[in-house]
Image 1 (cartoon, helix red, strand yellow):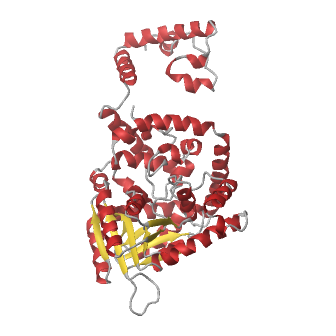
Image 2 (spheres, rainbow, N blue to C red; image 1 turned 45 degrees about the vertical axis):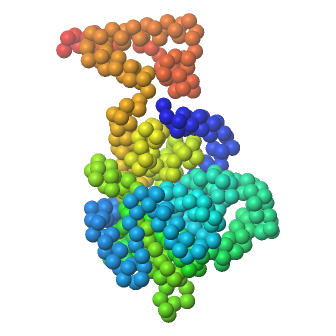
Length: 471
C-alpha cells in the first residue's frame, strides 16, 4: 500500500466522523442540488443538450491537432504568443521566463485548476514574486495555506465564522464587519490593491474556440476580467483538450456548463479574449500568451478506452453527486482533481502506483454517469483503472491470496459446494457463541452498521436438487 493510499484511508475515516464537516458539506450540496434541478427546467430538452455538448467535445478531441493549429494561427496573427508545453516543468519554465523578462513583481491569478496541476504559484514565489489568487474561494484557501477543496467551489468546506476568523487574522485592515456581504467587501478591498499593482495576470480557459482563435472564460466574479485586462502581461494556461471547433458551439456549452456547475442559466461573466489590446483599445494586456499543456493528455487521447475523459468541462457535477465525496470531502483525495473525475484522471496523468487507489474510492453507483453534462461514463473508467492498478502489481498480498483461493474454489463444483457448506457452519457456530458479527473477516466495516442476514440451512444447489432433482 502506497503512502498516499494510507493517508487517504486515515483522512477518510477522520472526515466521515467529523459531523460538523459533513453538516457544512450537506448544506452546500443541498443548495446546489436545488439550484441545478431548477436550472435544468429552463431547457426544452436537457438530455438533448447533454448529447449535443458531448458531441461537440468529442468532435474537438477527434480533430485535436488541426483545431489547435487553427487556434494558434489566429492568436499569432493578432500579435499573441502560443507555447506548446509537454509537461508541468516545461509550462512552469516558460511562464517564469516570461515573468522574469517583464520584471514582474506581483502576479494576480484568476481561478485555474491547470495552474494547480503544474504547481505554478510556488515556482513564481521561489523567484521572489508575490502571487495572489483573486477568486474569492481560492483566496480563502490560499490564506489558509491549503489546496482547493472542490473544482468549482474551493472553500465549500468552510463556514462563514471560519472565514471571518481567517480574515480578521490575515487581512484585519480591510475588515468592516462579519456578514456575508461585508466579508466579500473585505476581500474586494484587499484584492483591489493587488489588481492595480500586478504586472502579470494569469488565467485558465474553459474553452478554446478554434475557428475564431478565442479563449472563452466563464466566471461569477469580476476578478476574471480584472485579471485579464489590467496587468500589462496576460498568460492563459490551459489543457489542450479544451479546444472546440466553432464559436457557435458556445451556444450550448456555456449554458450547460453554468447549469451543472452552479445551477445558473449562464455565468455572470462570459468573456472572449484573442490577443493583446489593439492601438485603439483602452483595456487589455500589452503581451498575450497562451500555454497549451499536454502533461499526459496525449496518452489519454491515444487510449481509445479512456479517450472520452478528455471531454470533461470541469463543472464539478460528478463531485457534487458522488456519495463518497459527500462524506470524505475534497482534501481527502490529496490530488489536484478530487472526486470521480480526479480518481479517473490522476492515475493516468501521474501514476497508478501513486493514485491508483483513488479508483477504489467509488461505490460504482454510477450516479456520476447520470449527471455528467458531456455524458462521460466515469464508472467504466474507474473500473479500467482498477484493472490497470492490479495488473501493475499494486494489489495487497492478502487480496491476491484471497482471490487466488476463491478462483481455485470456484473452478471446481465440488470444491465450491464444500466451501459453501463449511462457511455456513462456521458462521452459524460463531453467531451461536455470541461472537459479534462485525468482528468477522473482511466485511467487518460493512457489517458493523448493518444487520447480518440469517444464515440459510441449505445452499441454493441443495434447494434446487430438492425441488427439481438433477435437472
